[in-house]
Length: 276
Image (cartoon, rainbow, N blue to C red; front, top):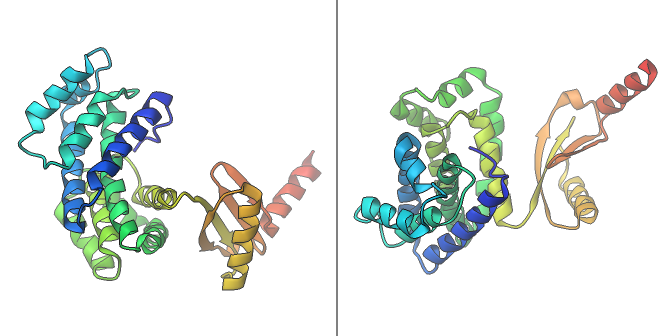
């Protein structure tokens, strides 16, 4: 999935998400699940139908005409909550047709995260997605199987169910099943990391990926979290990974910034200095 970095697509995403939040207002969990499933279905349709994708994202076409086309084709297939979200998505201007697909898929994922948030389970979903990404990323054959865009979807779902069935939140399972069904060129571990970060953003937090040679105690985690919050002036979610190659200390990545306090990092820096 693209990162939607273009300004036009960022604005389009914000407008569509506002419509999504209106659509989920007062909705029951089952209604939000149905909304997400319908949006996933629209994203899959547009992903496979290039002519329709281009027509609905054509910035040269009148926005009302794009909405009329979407309503005419999808009006009897979508519920009262999903159709306004799709109509808003095709009304606004994206940087390209693929970003429209990515945006609708993002809305489907966000709907499920809203469901988890309202149930007080968003923390668990975020943690499970992150851990699953690490587990799958560490097993080459498993990642290759689940990331294969031509793989049998039912077979991949069976593998996922066997791996995590009833041991994770229902929202987590639904997100993972959707991801392996349509990886869209991503490695599954990357997609899971992206989902974990989207979960963190739902709580208006940044994500700090922390690698350490040994597990951090609760006190150490709390101290690190407070320190990072003081540095970045915003809440920070810790995603922890034990990596013996760090050789002591911590390796911390927040967005594009890396704070390398590890022995390995200091040794590497020293070698560079000596080579100069």
